[in-house]
Amino acid sequence: MRLLVTGGAGFIGSNFIRYMLSKYDYQLINLDKLTYAGNLENLDEIKDDPRYTFIHGDIADEKCVQEIFTQDIDVVVNFAAESLVDRSIEDSGVFIRTNVEGTRVLLEAARRYGVERFIQISTDEVYGSLETEGYFTEESPLDPGSPYSASKTAADLLAMAYFKTYNLPVIITRCSNNYGPYQFPEKLIPLMITNAIEDKPLPVYGDGLNVRDWLHVRDHCVALDLVMRQGRPGQVYNIGGNNERKNINIVRRILKELGKPESLITFVKDRPGHDLRYAIDATKLKKELNWLPTYAFEKGLQETVNWYCNNQKWWQKIKSGEYRKYYEQMYAHR
Ligand code: NAD
Ligand code: DAU
Image 1: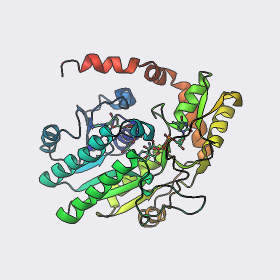
Image 2 (image 1 turned 30 degrees about the vertical axis):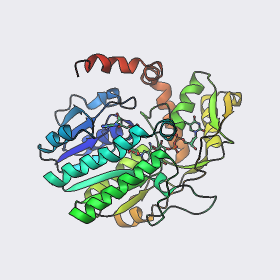
Image 3 (image 1 turned 30 degrees about the horizontal axis):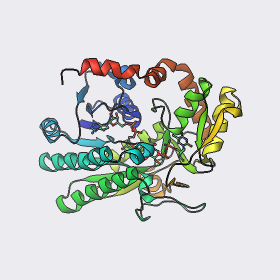
């Protein structure tokens, strides 16, 4: 089995690569552009594994992608994306290029060369926002609220069109908010942990009452492995852990874990169009593929706090910008 993982130097992709290589004897190619969010240090543990190949490239670069597909790819797992809502509000262009055009380029190559499965990693944000009740099912209407989620929705529609038009065996997964090791410290949980360790202010948007449904990245990887091997082409699978929490409660919990004062919390201007609540109904995945999340949120969060305490060099290099210098030298000739 030869697997093409895109965006494997990011948070979820790197966790997925480590998980798959620990479980199977697959050949795995990681295609990553190494944007600010890509960090090869996330894969230090497996970088010399003979089953693993890294390719520095862009999913929207047709020539690069086609060349990779000449190597008999069996399965594509497309994680590569611009993934932060706030950045999409500042500048949506790169979100359209990577998330929409990049997905199109991959789909087109997969159609031309043929693959057994094309897993499109989407997000619960394509469903928009919920009020205080109800859950997103796979049948919920698509109603994205940010340029990021609109770009992910466009990619989903394109992927499904390739299933309908060309019978490309596409499966879409829509997961809720992930947390765990190697998450870039611009997202809520790692930003709050690392700022708290450094005694810096913790910027909470608006009143802090927005709700997200948290899933440990390892539980996400297990779900993706199942979907990849046993999921039905043309289907969408929601993935979520039924761990709804208000942002402010998560921030307080992190401070408590670290023994830091609540005076570090700073309420700041709200995110424009801030989605109030996400909550996933993952019944389909549980019933069809027998998936069950294993992490209790409080335990997972405690482990994550410990990971950031024990891996300060990793995130300090990111926060200082030092991690980029390595790539700038390495790829200066391109
Ligand atoms: P991330 O930002 O940590 O990583 C993204 C990776 O993609 C980086 O390594 C980056 O270098 C790479 N990349 C970006 N543009 C590229 C391009 N044009 N070509 C090749 N590589 C490129 O993201 P993440 O949090 O790991 O999310 C991965 C996927 O999961 C995304 O598709 C995201 O929409 C989806 N998702 C994320 C979450 C979450 O909570 N983080 C939840 C649900 C779904
Ligand atoms: O739901 C899945 C999505 O989860 C993924 O598709 C996205 O890629 C991922 O980034 C995440 O999106 P969110 O916008 O929910 O995650 P973020 O960590 O940016 O924010 C989580 C919540 O915390 C949200 O309500 C905004 C708030 N927040 C975030 C930051 C960065 C703050 O209050 N302060 C902050 O500094």
